[in-house]
Amino acid sequence: MSRPLENKLALVTGSSRGIGAAVAARLAREGAAVIVTYASSAERAEAVVVDIRREGGEAEAVGADLGSPDGVKTLIASIDGAFGGRFGGRLDILVNNAGTVGYGPFLDQPDDAYDKHFNVNVRAPIALAKETGRRMAKAGWGRIVNIGSAFGEAAPMGGVTLYVATKFALHGFTRGLSRELGPFGVTVNGVQPGPIDTDLSPNEGTDEHAAMVKLTSVGRFGKVEEIAAAVAYLASPEASFTNGENLTVDGGWNA
Ligand SMILES: NC(=O)c1ccc[n+]([C@@H]2O[C@H](COP(=O)([O-])OP(=O)(O)OC[C@H]3O[C@@H](n4cnc5c(N)ncnc54)[C@H](O)[C@@H]3O)[C@@H](O)[C@H]2O)c1
Image 1 (cartoon, rainbow, N blue to C red):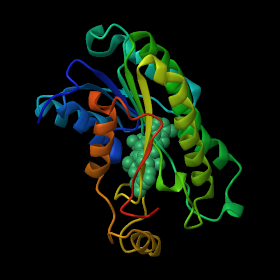
Image 2 (image 1 turned 90 degrees about the vertical axis):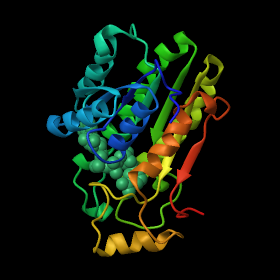
Image 3 (image 1 turned 135 degrees about the horizontal axis):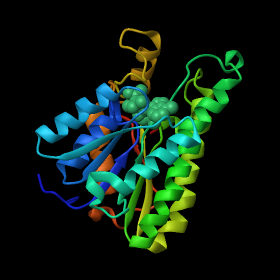
């Protein structure tokens, strides 16, 4: 595999497992030094780091709860000292991947569910994009990739209304910010996954899982690597003319 991301620093939120872990591994394989972030499971994050290093890549783990503004500050602070300060405070690639979902009828959702969804899925990505976007614009190059959802474009099923609201918001943020940062050599794009087998999605054998399979035209859940491939494209130097795109990778769900 070629290494188009050599000498680039990437930060992938929520990369201790699932889609984020696959994205971190893929970007590292392509040459990027990767900051792996986790909410509470340092062990899982360390395992991702060890796997990346075993393959000859570079990674470090940082813990931060993105449900609070302090978590964002922690991640921003980690950029300056990352990899012995080798990147001088520069961050080349931000992947806003961390996300949360609460299943169940909207009318039964507890009041604190709004803040939880919006803090993690919208406020944290926006705050991180602001702080890192400044650094990218100054450097004249950057890639921001927001992991949205097929639920950021349509709501073909109920039970995830707050999640849908946050992913539509992220979709709009991606488009708006792309207008502002494009002139500085910084692209802002999204990837909108359909159903992918991870801790966040319904387990195989449940009614929800079966309903989601039916909504695809390929008749299956996707794999984390299929999302990582889309992120790798958008993060690459080759994607320099792709800006403001919300790339749907959903097995035909929203066709
Ligand atoms: N799995 C799917 O079917 C699917 C479909 C569409 C979009 N997505 C999106 O993909 C992204 C990754 O999800 P996944 O499927 O890998 O799920 P996952 O549950 O395996 O991973 C989510 C990640 O987000 C992190 N996270 C959650 N709350 C956090 C908090 N408060 N602070 C810091 N980190 C936090 C978790 O630690 C974890 O690393 C999410 O944005 C999700 O909305 C997933």
